[in-house]
Length: 329
Image (cartoon, rainbow, N blue to C red; front, side):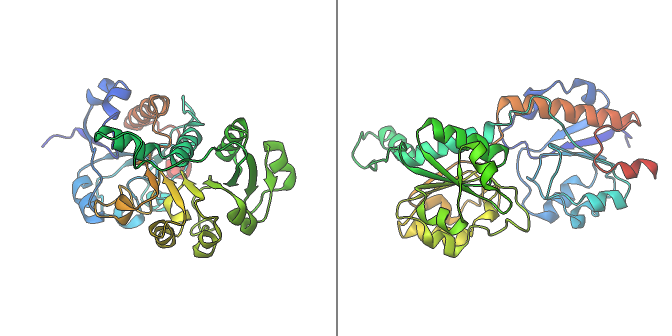
């Protein structure tokens, strides 16, 4: 039986990992397996990862709770992209003495997600997805919804951090008015970004389009609830490039089916989106498969660092460790 280190590269849903970095230094010393399909469930993940020493994961794709981590008997190091991962139980890794190594900077395109949000907004406003489908099936304009111009309309931004700030700047360039809200947002900070702070209820009721730019947490889960969706103007566009559970999915689906709102989504409660999910056939939608940060510049930063993390661990000198207390055990 070989003692060769086994490395699992998870969540390569676009099949980009091999071409994004030079894997030769790692494959010369370890058996590296790339997983391009999502696991069916936790039992499937536990079975397929049981023999791996190192798991390199993409942030918040495959959930890595304690219940899974503790079913991986050979796991000695866990890598993740980004600096934090709410779907990873770091404490469970620490309890077992498993270092968690992250990636930092390294060419990450920090505006990519906001750029996609802008694209989804424009696509929803102008019916681009329907237009593309119609023209590919022999039609032309008939059947394509009449769009709306964005100049002079009001964009409501939920979460005015880095990405929300970028989205605000894009909207201002389109001559939109921007209003914003989040739990800790001040009028001064909103004004500095080019927006006006308003109460959440007012934002939901008056915006022609709403774009969400918040981190998923217990405070933001279900933040856009049934009452909020009911307040939206008829035909208003709801853009979500943050995380699916921030929106009450059932309430959103009801509003879509009733033709009351339009949704432009990049994220979902469950990912990959199940084949039979009602959103796949819902009207008034533009759907993207969680491509927010999925650009070449991101992969050019993420994967080389993941390789460095694995090699450094194998050399007994872990780097970019988010739970450094394990190094003293």
